[in-house]
Amino acid sequence: MKTRLASPEDVASIARIYNQGIEDRLATFETRARTTEDIKGWFSASYTVIVVEDAGLILAFSAIFPYAQRECYAGVREFSVYVSRDHRGKGVGRIAMEALMAEARKQGVWKLLSRVFPENEQSLRLLGSLGFRRVGTYEKHAQLDGEWRDVVIIEYLV
Image (tube, rainbow, N blue to C red; front, side, top):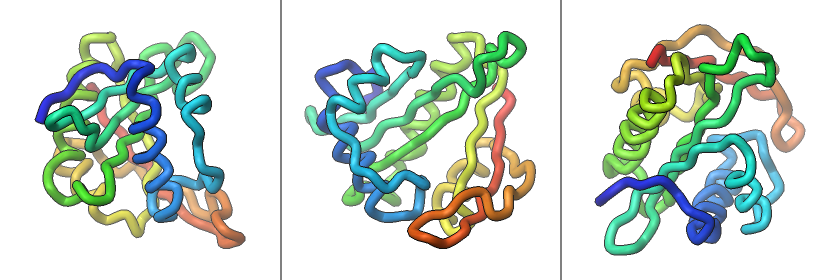
């Protein structure tokens, strides 16, 4: 397996993996499937996307994007990581996150943060093992399929 910066040619694979995460209802509040056009927009925005591939097949992606527009938060990035269903639990998410963390350091980012559903124990374990800390919980952060969901706030000082 190898990691690299994603390119616009990867949008179909990224959309496929992201849409699996949307369908599973364990990683995002999003409910609308993303098209390749949606993902192409990431490449014109301030996103950095890393893919993990094996023999030309993209198995996972991780991404960082601005936390806020205010200049004082210029070194803070939100992040996401998604692994193809058939490759979960095999260390691919760790590879994606380690590459993303290294890229964030190169970019001068000083903090990575995200929110994770408490039920997503696999992601919370992975992030904890990489040095992310739990800051707290946002209760009733948003609704998913008509139900209020909490999220665990996590951060990593790069």
